[in-house]
Image 1 (cartoon, one colour):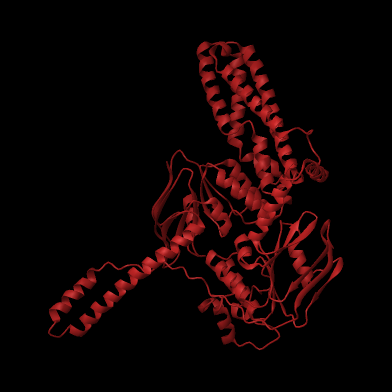
Image 2 (tube, rainbow, N blue to C red; image 1 turned 135 degrees about the vertical axis):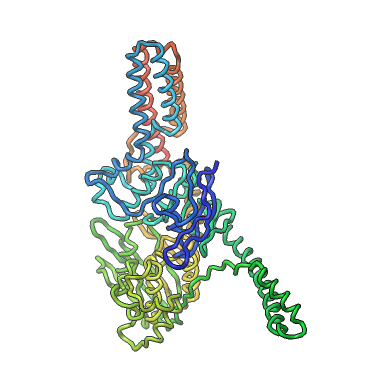
Length: 627
């Protein structure tokens, strides 16, 4: 079934069209990514599909029986709502059905007219069937699963929404969309504001969901895990590719090669014909020249290859410094609770270190302690002789927002002519009039590239980068990865972009519960070691396994007594069978004629549903303590 049909969609914001005849469709269960460079019109297209923006021509039509849902970017919540109550609003249709089913049950119990009883019974059966299909008896479980997956703690569930940070509020918007389960989810950068663990949970959730998805994301690992089809938006039109992002990249190379050959052959042929017309237009071969001129007018021109050029990025050669660029000894820092303690490691000249860990674990604080911007509680940081540091802060506070770009990157301590600064900006794809715009007039991706250009102008041999890929499109990220790999200086960076980490890092400093761990390698190495560690735990002998479980239970107390997982799974199955049997009884005409019996079965049904909910929670806890 086709959920969404987009036909000949056009949209202008100026002389050039942003969308110029876009066409595609999305079927039930499709997982589709929408890729394209910054400014190509991806968000514009998503807003038109969602009905938030009108097209100039064409149509985006959702099937009449389908529901669509867009991930909002501007949180707006009632002043008195909590995280839990706001999440519940996403399931309002289910709650309404459950309330109607309860009302019908009461009416059935008091109804004495056979025709009315039959009518009410049919409606009640329909509601019970729909409630079973959509998990209406596990509403609390669904909410807990999604909020927990998106890294909301138990304490935050009853917290007023107004007390959440902006990032947490955006995560709550994502939770509401996932809980609402529209037939077509429109996701614009859904992994923004998520750490790596929450992103991995979201990937699994979306990959396993039955809903169709149209997603815009710059997270290449995410696109590979979730999507099965790729739409490339470029020059106002769409090209479709089978498979995920990696498959798209392979096919793109092959298509470009065909497009180049076809385009170049036609251009060669056209050039020959134009040359013949020019040379013989007034000569003896005038008739032949005229014939070729007419052929030229009839030729259907092959479009130029759809080549999306990455912005150029390059850091200057680094001056040599001492062998140990950074030495960290017994470093400690705490605010309300400890962030890190007794942290010791060396970063050698030329190494590329990534800092990996969940939100709130102290990664940015660590960088600022290294730079001396935040005073540590204990320990010491020292730099080798000759180290010159440049810092990229994720808020881009290094750039004066009210200055022209060409002035904002001027180093204070050295002569730097305007021509040299414009050349530097051009090395990061900032060209033409953009150099004279105010920094606050630029897009996020443009500001990011200006900040990177400013760093390059500092002639640093140690780059400290906090989320340097923010706002960069897929092609700019690839260019930055190449620039850092080729940089012969030292780099320490924080990033949630796993693909970027894997391409750049040769060492990782991984934040884990109560400790930091050094990994010699990139993200794939870390994943390999993590899987080995998990396998080692699974293969431990019974005694050590029990010790591990006790240590875990020390960190988080059990809510339920210990029971074997297989026993709990058996009880869950029996409870579900009992509920099904009670529903079957309620569909019997003989039962429906007896109001007191209906009430008794309803009471049993509520008890069984409550029992099932408790069993599911017990099973989830047992699974958690087993890991």
